[in-house]
Length: 379
Image (tube, rainbow, N blue to C red; front, top):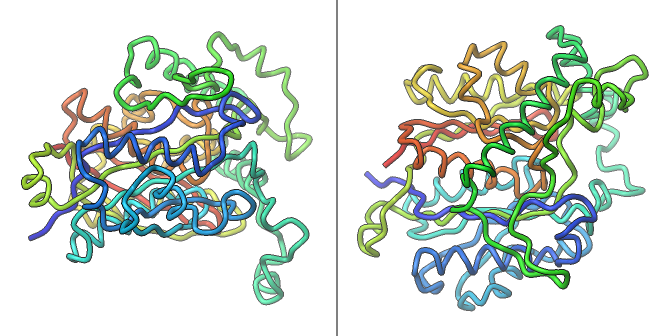
């Protein structure tokens, strides 16, 4: 029986909005990771069957099937195809799912899954600016327009999270990320990016030393009496990440040692207006499908779109909080939309390898009230 394994996982540093990576075209940002991925594995790019690339704002510099453009910009053989995927924030996690399914089905032997987002150069929602992208039939069913920020406020209210709860979680995200950098945990996964200003080697969004008092000075953004503000939300960011995937048989043929295999991959949908709750049913579905329990999972990556998302996930799933986002999350590291699923996978896979963790799970909320959930098994 064929399986889908990951043999290499790499990412750029994550740049802040209008920060160190803002001057890099998203095609080039993608190409840097793609070129490094093939070089890391020591393979000829001509053996790659496809590049499946997540990208959310598919307009401006990120249009025209950026997957194919980036593959060519990376110097890949002209025989290597590319397809661009949009499942909102989960786009590159969905790319991973498509890649795994194609390998198991025998349609692919070797494939790259990943994604990119330059939110500095292609602002969120800019592709839909001035356009009714929902349509009259959708709005007839859901008169209240979807809003991630209001959804986060609804979650905080529904699960009873106070301002101190969400701010404390945000501070812990930065503290964990700072420890990860200090311990050198990201060194094996980050590809340096050369810019006109110099080489970027580290994530820009980490802010150590914050306090509840300093976060308390920030005003709520979405409700005057709410709890959500810039300090407990994911950061607008630039970045790219990619995974080299293949069948176990092909890895053996190439003499490559797989890091993990894709054990289980599922989807779930939930309320599209609140939008952010689907990681909870997605995780339950993944556990049921895999035959594993929550306690069998040694590490979790639950995307920190807003602090109430992982907090509600913890409250509902009863997971060990010490296993959640052990190296920090999007509140500290940033959330380059189309790249985030692959970034989470890259961080999780390296953490599993470095610590001998057999099973890891990642999940993230996505536009439309959706979520992917993926379980990896250490090999």
